[in-house]
Length: 211
Image (tube, rainbow, N blue to C red; front, side, top):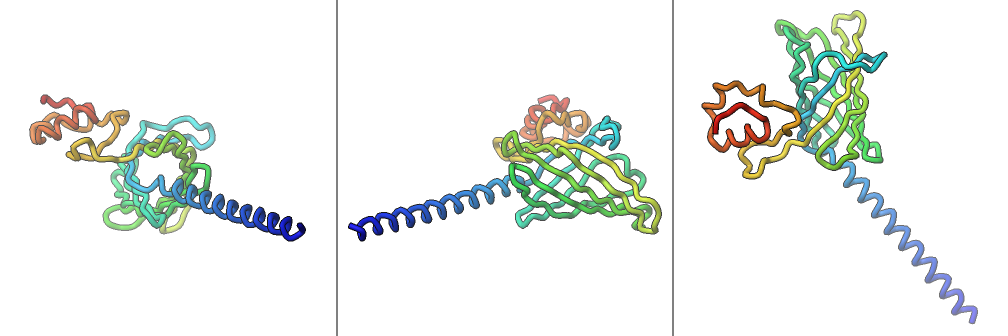
């Protein structure tokens, strides 16, 4: 009788261990899958903020970010504030923080007349709570450091990202119409577009092209 009881207890213990192992493995797999959702290329609308009041500064601008497998990133921006200086692409790293949140840090060189004058470091918190094709940067801090010494300059921002995907027939990369990029396509450019590109430009970018 005792041997039967011990046997049953051992079987229950083994089942509990097996179930626990499966649960841990499933949690690890889910975390890895969640951590990979940021991978890909994104069109990002950035809003600069007053760090003290949170009020927007100037008009939003567009950036492009690519989060690569291996947790590296490359980004570039259309921010007009750098003119006449030239800002190179930013390079950095990203990581999954859990609960659909990510951390990312990137560094870019700023040159003037061919000489390096500043570095720009961007640290941001990214959340993906509305699906796999959009994200929000809830907090971004920007630090400019002069290479010749002197005071640093800091800034703050938020952003909204939209995943870049191939449009239906693969004729061009899809950027969301919420970015209202049509105004960035001059009318003369429409005449040089293939008809299929025109259709996509009108549909996705709201360009003023005659089909």
